[in-house]
Image (cartoon, rainbow, N blue to C red):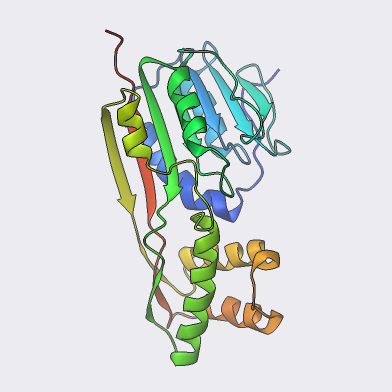
Length: 255
C-alpha cells in the first residue's frame, strides 16, 4: 500500500485557506510519529503534506462530509462525517495535532464541534483553525467604470456572505473565548488580506469561486456572470481580497 495520496486539484474555496494552513505547519511541532486529525480535508492537498511530515510511524485521520477525492493509505485513514450529526473520530487526548478548515456552510452547534477537537488533543498538542473573517468583505479599489465597480462589489458581497457563514454561525464563532474557557491559553491569531489585480491568480480564484457558487447566487444573471468573469481578467481591476484568519493554539498541560 502506498503512503501518499494523489489529490485532485483543490477546489476554489479550499485554495483560499490551504496556503495559510501549509505555511503554518512549520510553526508548530509536528514529529514523525505524531497522530494528526484533519477536519475538512477536501481533496487531500494538506492531507498529503501532513502524511509526509508524520511518516510511516505516524498517522493522519482525514475527515470530510465528501470523501470522494480522498484515498486511504498505510498512514491516512479516511472518515466520512456529517459534523451536525456525527462525532469526530478518536478518543480523549489521542491526537498530537488537530487541523480544522472552515466547513462549507454553518453548523448547528459549532461550539460542540470545537470542544470535540479540544478534548481529542493530548496535553501539549496543537490545534490549527482556518476560516474567512466575516467582518472584512472585499473592497474594490479600482475598476474600468462605475458600472463595473458596482457589479464586482455586489457579487463579492453576496459571495462573501456565503463563504463567511453570515447567514448562520460557523464553527469558529467566538473561537478564541471558547479555547480559553477550555484551558487552551496559548494561542495566536493571524489575519491576512492581499491586493488582487485583474488577470492575476487572486482574481482568477474569485472567478472560479463565483462559477462554483453560481447556483446559490440570487439576482445574478448569466450576462452578469460573463461580465464578472471578463472583469476578473481585466488588469484595470484592483481589489482587496477577503481576510483569512488562522488560529493556532497549544493545549495546556494537565495539572
